[in-house]
Amino acid sequence: MLFPDARGRRLRANPNFRRMVRETKLSRDDLILPLFAIEGKSVKKPIDSMPGHFQMSCDHIVETAKKAKEAGLPAIILFGIPDKKDGLATRAYASDSIVQKAIQEVKEKVPDITVITDVCLCGYMDHGHCGVVDKGIIDNDASLDLLARTALSHVKAGADMVAPSDMMDGRVGEIRQTLDEENFSHIPIMSYAVKYSSAFYGPFRQAAESAPQFGDRKTYQMDPANGLEAIREATMDIEEGADIIMVKPALSYLDIIYRLKQEIDLPIAAYNVSGEYSIMKAGEMMGWVDAKELIMETLISIKRAGADLILTYSAIDVARELNS
Image (tube, rainbow, N blue to C red):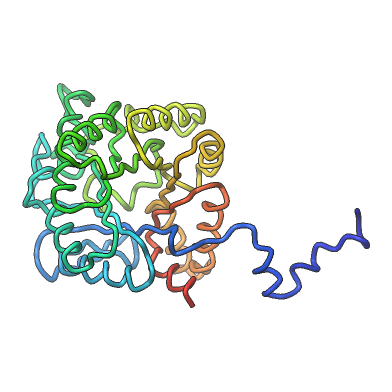
């Protein structure tokens, strides 16, 4: 049927029509807020490359978690900036380290919000890589026990879910086995299964103080040119016990999110990463774009591609907008 018999504008004619036939709907239930925890009290240090975000001590983490809960968000994900670093990332799995303390504080004072923790070693290593380094090479297998110990320490502190982001082969299975043996078989794993080596991580590395001190992460993070590899990585992590599969970054990999949605039957998370957020905020500061509109359009595109969950630095603002 062609014009004039067919008129697509009929169902765009007013806001109610558009609401009624909208194919993709973004919900507060889809959103997870990343937060950066740092030692100290009353610390709220601005992250220059991420306007509106801060490195925060536990008291401010709790206050932000309260705001997230009040906005209707179901979950936060915690990243830690430790007080010291070494070659074995010992502060990553110490019971009195920053993420462990932040978990305890949030679960005590905002018990109804889900606390997810990023499980990685880069921010705790003096060399900034995501695994143990031996003679300049990242030693995959030597890193697995440390990652599992980190995940276990988070769960013992009260974490509701752990999210390994290191991209070491076999880490999901190691974490699953460790949690099961310690009677935490009920704790889900959200795996950064499909994590690309991306230029979009720059602002995050400033925020988490986790930039590598030599080389890069291309030997363990994925080549942006590869799509089939994403299916293999996700499938392996599912077989090892992952409950949710994540794609990171989101915007340059919408096709990967879509392909995974057709291939797997687990929930898919997508990380709307720091560089994506910062570019939009910087454009707004220059007066070139409306960041609020860009962010909403961006999140809808991620949801339309097939993501069930979206990690986004805009989570509170978006949740309030959806609630208005």
